[in-house]
Image 1: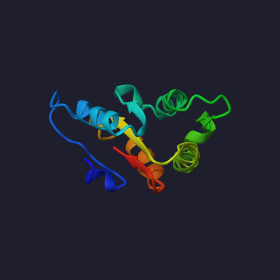
Image 2 (image 1 turned 180 degrees about the horizontal axis):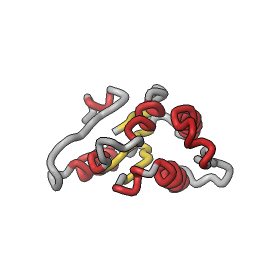
Image 3 (image 1 turned 120 degrees about the vertical axis):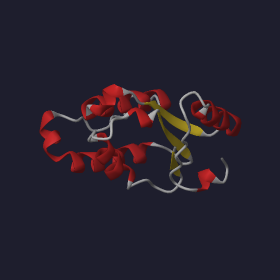
Image 4 (image 1 turned 180 degrees about the vertical axis):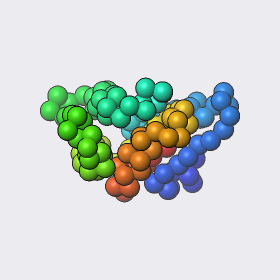
Length: 133
């Protein structure tokens, strides 16, 4: 894991029940690093749900009242790529490196979900010191 985390993005893949989540959680616990953990599920195919729950995950990770990420209103759905860039820019400004951003159970998101494009746009801005798992 030390070698893998030298890269900005790490994909842990194995069959269900193989211990992927346990591996990452125990590694981060042993290393004592900061992590923003987001457990994905079928509701995340709705990007408004994803952005709303990312805000909640951020508040758990860094509970500061003044920290608010952009809100995805219906008007922003027309230009989801621009919104994604703005959202992730603000998210990365908020996170303090070194930090690991974990999207647990990402494999459960259907292939045709727009969320893949949203994450691709946003995570292309990943700054040094913040790692995606």
